[in-house]
Length: 240
Image 1 (cartoon, helix red, strand yellow):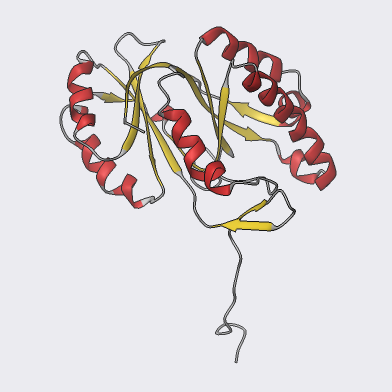
Image 2 (cartoon, rainbow, N blue to C red):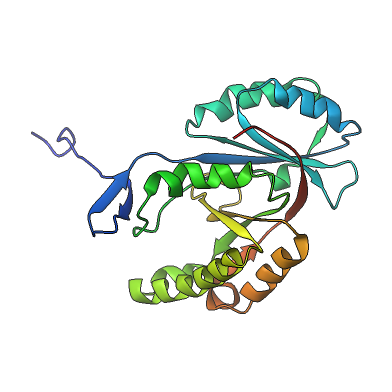
């Protein structure tokens, strides 16, 4: 059998580890896509349209645009974005709005390899956070690491990422902010690596979290770009 016809098997699953040390794996992932629009004079029409769809969606008022909105749609099946969501956004009332393509983001959930509950890490947790009425404020933005980060050893990368992780855990445990991390390699038109969501009850602590992260090695030394930032407050959420 030639090398061209020989069967090749690749394990592309997300990895985790149970509390007893048993390796875990899962091929389930949640895809999430963000869109922003301007010239929205009647958000009630938008809400009524979203109430008729079975796609999990959160709608936000854009704090930086008095006639702006943003929406985050979620599905385990990426075909939903090319079919159902595409149809929804091409029809009235969305067809009358002005899309802001600079804010369009698409990403997928992923694991670090040590999570004891992959279902919650990859699907249930991120979905519940987006649809949690107790987290009305959001900041969504893309980021791109510089290429120097990829030259670091695995141990060095773990140390850099751990500094960020500890800050996120600290703010989360205090009830100030929750985060969502999405990989967007090959999914982003501007070649960004990740889509980040910060969600919380109040906006100020979320801004302070991002300010505090500026002092970490990852942000100060290994990031090439951040943003644009979409800052919004909940107008509508699908039922959990």
